[in-house]
Image (tube, rainbow, N blue to C red):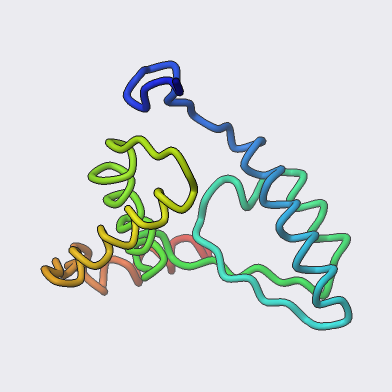
Length: 138
């Protein structure tokens, strides 16, 4: 019987270095697939994307350019929030014997969400975001 998903031992925090390793594997795969093409990668400001290993990889692959979204001002942040909601309210509470069962569960949650959507509301004022961006440029 698999351990309970609510057991503290099952909850683990993945270090930025470990996430960077996974991120580098992804970048290498995409770079190989689109060899000879310029790649523009849009990222949030996660520390995973700026580790020394990732910076070194980026320097060695000049055809790849990173573009970072402003902190707190991106639709990517909202996507991350939505997946956090999915995880907290649905997936973490479940127990799934197969990948298919997990996928079915997630699809049901998405269908329910779409039947009763909850809009996300921006909480920061545009002027505050612009000031923050300007401060970071200098």
